[in-house]
Length: 404
Image (cartoon, rainbow, N blue to C red; front, side):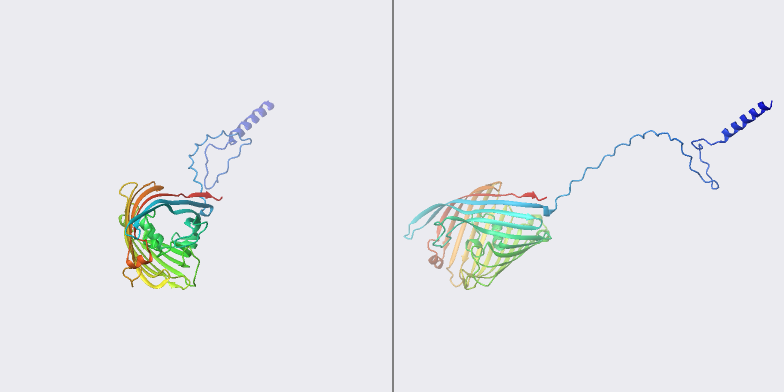
């Protein structure tokens, strides 16, 4: 009986203890109060591995950014170019007896080959030209009068703040090239500044140019030997050139081609340091399809005669009425000496041509040359009519080389 009673008592105690023990995974809800802080649930003695979570949807990745462009100092731009003019000339002139005779020839008045370099803000350019070795008025040449190659430009430069540009070496001058660009038909004729050697296209020295903001033009300052790219320095004087090309209506796209060109050259030439000063001004409309303008240059000192003064006047017009067709005309009058009113040289040129994609073209030109009595005495045979058939070819294309 005692054994049976003890067995029943032990069973009751065991059942009561199981009813009061907490669940191994913790209570079904937390009864946290301020008096009874929450306690962390007891960890599983042997944790059951949780099932793998469902994979999250793969986000759409942003496209990879383009690789950063190479630094400008790791890219070199090379710009090769070529330009040549070939022509057939037929001259009709007085043979001195009152009869008209003729002379005809083939000629290559221009052959240019150049290479430009740009690395970051640094610049360089070399331009070679073909020329007769004897030159005008020379008695001796190389291998007779062979066409030889010489440097026309060879300079290095730097562009700063996308406004200033400095060139040094055998550099392009400022005024003469600007007039050639305004005329726009160099295969047909030179400008008056170049035709009569009033200003040089290149010289040994340096130039500094400034591009006026908002496309209002360009200002320039040049400092040269003064003897041109074909001669060495002959005196201690140096030439200074101040140049401006202003587009006063640049804020109007339709009127931006209107340009005012002005320049002053203070210089000397020859062993005697003869004065060679120039005051130049022009008004022009400079556009691909239409170009028209007029200019004048006060020439103070000419052909190493420092006391001689004269004036050069020129006017031009060119048009591209429809694709490819080119019409041109120019007039040049040079009074070489104010002291002799008949010391004049006058030239008139009209032309018609056709150009394909700015690469090749052909022109037919008619020139008339006339001279005053004093000028004709020093230049016999100057007066004539000339018919020319001109072929032109040009090419220029930049390409970039990575230096990385």
